[in-house]
Length: 297
Image (spheres, rainbow, N blue to C red):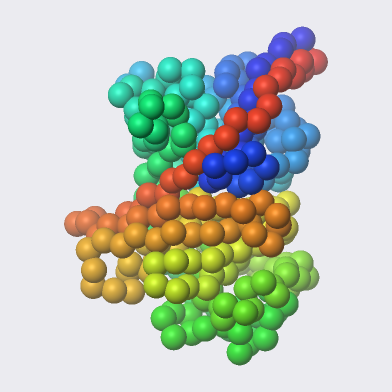
């Protein structure tokens, strides 16, 4: 039998019981893939991370991210939370950590307050913005339990986009956002035969007022009916919105999780570079639990 330490944190919040929950195994050496997946199912959170030695000694760690159904190539709140946890263990170098992940390298910069206390982190998404398939207002409306009139097409059609992991993005009327609820059968109908997605069809809805955004993310096919704070999706959204303009940079403040009773606040920035549009996302973290798991071999 082998015993492993874990901690949990609430991410994208400044208070306990807000934001998105995350479990971090700070030294997962010796774990099998099956054990990692089983632990993610046991915790039953949106994601659980497992920290391993890096393949390149210049990097901080190799980080594997699992939701309740599969390993993920990249995700937002797991990186923010894992960076916060490892920085508490003095694993950062001048406030920076570099994680090796399936989607590429993820740079994490920790945040501290004026007194030097660790408060959260900001991550760079590993890839530039890429766009894929477009979807109809009818398809999105069916998935979200809305009407076609609730879907706003002025800025863009519902579209697949990614800066490391794929989501479908749709703007909706402000009054429609609170009424949305996922129809699993509609998600399954779209996902059947769908190719070119890094994870099963997931839908990110948003309502916008200038640089203030309210968002909800539904991913029932990955085991997350609704997510309270989705860093990877909101980073992608920031990059997508910048791509619709000729501006060089953009900043957004995103609120999410209000309908779930777990209010979250995410700060997103996007910049236009020679190689595409890149995004960052960050926010606060609050420590919750510490514990150990003993696995039978």
